[in-house]
Length: 593
Image 1 (cartoon, one colour):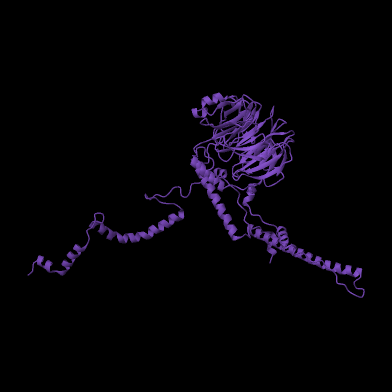
Image 2 (image 1 turned 120 degrees about the horizontal axis):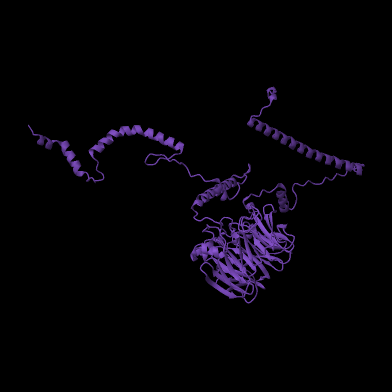
């Protein structure tokens, strides 16, 4: 008998198993599985197959409920996107929904729907990111029975931090005053223009002088252009363009006797008002004159712009305010605002309210949407200069006293919010963008006044970034030039640009007549045929004409009657449908068949 070892050695199955083990590659440690695990897998395979339909069913139920489960097995207690308050959504609302017509082209319908979806998504995103804005606007509040207009600038500068306290300062420039003032769009740079020829550019926050020149003739106004590298100076004869180093770039002789200037940043247009009653527009991107309008209203020394629609507002000595666009030679609107001459005009950031001051010592608030007065205030000496801040504060200069009013158009104002006396007669006022600062140009130089709550605390870094570098400014300038709005799009109602112009039948017919040179729908005049034997007498000819005219008239009457019957039938069907939809039944309905 063979032993067990010998039998195993002679058994071919055992030899095959040993050969397979030798041929198999070595197993790594992470691929090793114990016998217990393999046995558990084998035992749990059938149970897993039974659980799979239950898990699939549970996932379907969760998907229907809208809840998600985490690794821990708990469901999301707040499923879906976070809700947004309606007041915050209204803050970022862009436009009303476009009314879609039933018979509309499918491509246009698709474009409109996609545009509305994009606008709605942008509105929601802006409302969500509003929580991330770090700064908040604050106003000056006094103690019990304390009037805020009695608080001096020195007390405010001592109470605030060192950085804010340095924003209150005075520049004594009594030799070349009074001064006109202009801040750049970012609020970082200041431009001063003295009546006697002194022009200076300052980085007012760091108090660094960029350039200082004397043009050796009188200066009427100064204005920054699209960047802080160029500015325009309205001198005694002509309009000059300088760079930030004080080098003269252009002398534009077409623009003579300029008194006031406004720059439209999104159109790259410099609007000028002259003593010869001309309103002119200069495209600074190409250096060409876009429009020259003779207003025929005399000397133009009161001017402002509407930031919302780029319409220019001009004040006149006869008490009227006119609204102008470069596309029309006539005024869009003429408003009689004062019994005397208009001294100053200002429009708020939203383009809703217009404030005017006149020789009748009144300050009036108008709603531009309806062109009707809302409020009227009496100032003892009148206001020579007006300026509105980004947060709606109004500054009014009366001689050497500058008063700041709060919430002028909503509630009746009885006293100023703040007041400050300067050393000379105020000649120019402007609030600094994104800062609680009011710049005052007067006969003795310049004063930077602290006005808490005046500036917008959060800025848009893609539009006007006060802290941008040279590279960022260059990139922004290229993008702004590419996105420049053409002057033909300036209109009183900017919402008209997003609407579809439906041409009427008369307009289309008129276009067809001008294209063809004749009216294809016109009927030929009936000329009676000449007949012999006395049948073409005057009486018989008139009878035949009347007979043809009556037949034409019958056709017209028949068509109108058919149209009326058709409209009445449609109205009746519509009424019956509405009655059925609302379920309104009458007691007489039981007699109907």
